[in-house]
Image 1 (tube, rainbow, N blue to C red):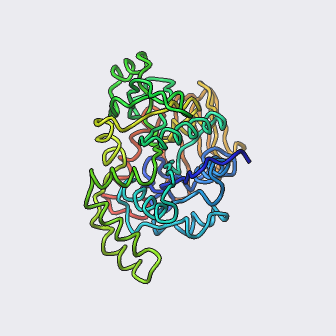
Image 2: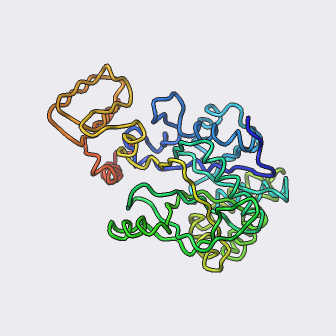
Image 3: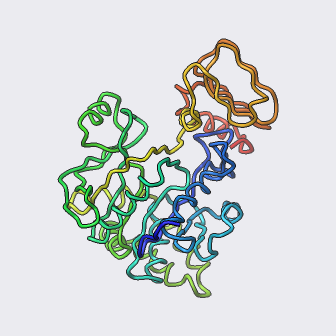
Length: 368
């Protein structure tokens, strides 16, 4: 195990509606619980595996939904019971990260917290560790720090972070100020961002001292801070369940990007360090194919390759139950599950959630 990062506590928000990789993922089985690399480890387990060398088993904290708590505990048997909390309902990332930060701050007022999504893939352990260590050093200086991913293409699927002037921080030589956060751009804008070398993908990785993050939350979202403090104060007592049930639904549904990072960046309080490791949020079946090493004009299989035959075809086949044969088709995606079959293309993979909405509107809750 490498040397642990002092005072660092990792927070892993593990949620999702299970719509972008339907029908493999469902509301009851979101993608963070799935093995999408053929490695035998789920995305959640991969996240745990790369964090433990930096924070130790006691430094990993997971926030998930009540319906997924048991599955998370089963997949992470070494996770401490007190480090796993279940939110009563989805409220986006800020309430989840905020509550765990409030609980951590009560255990260790000097803690630095770092949030990493449960359903992303990273390649390049040394580069990841270096980015986390630099981000922690910048956070110790009082900045909310994001790890911005060096873009490999002008993607329109990700938001962007614009890097500003170097900060000259000890322990974080590559840290710069953040000029602004930008929502998902169109293709031409994304191309100009990549060509400028000033923009990085926003992977939603944020590192900050617990007290700094809570202070900013109190300034930007005072009612949420008040509610989270009340829940955290009751956490270790007999009123935990009733306080959580009463206050959680009142918290604003908002992402940490919009609640804290964007407004604080405007005031000059956000830093970024470059992430030179390979990263993907596995946001659609095209990303799954890429993570599996797909090659143009070839069929990539997630599941049992012995069940697939293809001739002059390319794309992704997901099956482990019956044979799939494809002939003379390119860019195809076939996903075969016991109760649903999806046929689309990698080009249209981002729109799969529209089908989920159609089935939901048709009253087929059993499919979503």
